[in-house]
Image: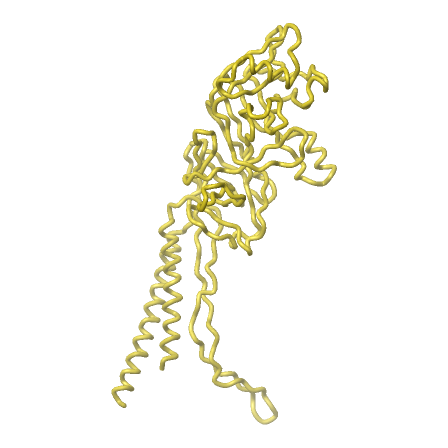
Length: 406
């Protein structure tokens, strides 16, 4: 008698778990980037009363006699299908059209420091903090990359849009821009001139230096995750693909060699001329890009002396991520996922490349929960739970009858 009762109880437990999963889905119907789950059942091992027998010349074969021992939850599968799109018009709201994830810095809650780990998320409701970082609602900073002139490896870091700094331009006698130089707010003109000379050499006769303070006015995010920022004087800092690196990547058959460099375009509409300085005068090299602007240096080997470069560590190219098996990711709260043993390694890259979808700016991805389907499954699970409960009651009544007879 007790075996039938425990079998029915297993059905209650399985259907209760499924109701819990459905409850979580319904609760997150308005959660940005939420991915629904479903509980699937499997049979528990069966008790064999007798094995089957093979047919012989006298008798036919017999089938085994087995009694199942109930049901269990075999898996709770995540559904990573695309959610709906909510258009907001805010330039910091981002969504991924297709596969892939945003990668954000993970903070070690034990000591408050950034760890080398990261979260993956589909929720793109980012904001810009006072330091120019794109951050989640929890303060986790969005990851990106920048590439130093002449390098072939992307440097991962956090997306940081410079919000306020000084721009010094070298102008020729006709007022055309020759070079650009960056310094933090408040740096003295004499110090700027000294730093500039150390980087590019003293300006030729007839040229002059002009320094202005600029503030961030607006920025936009492209479908590939590249950011363009416009400042109060009309200058623009944006991302471009280095054509020479594409040629080298194609020749080597290695797409990771493609570099996406940060460039500065002057509001005057001028293109920077070819460098007028020799390698001796300008040991940094490569500071000029005639077609689209001048490269922005972002490492310790910058034209600006170490410690006085507001562009240090600047990242203006989002790095989106992909994994082989998204269903293997671990939920970690706050719309975040963690890589697990069965998700596969995380691959970073430019949005729109590989298996990573394009970026939609000014839009958010809503939950992919199907309420009609969830309510249908809820009714089915509820009826299954009720039926299993009635079997428990029937078993109890049979046992009570036997006890009364005895």
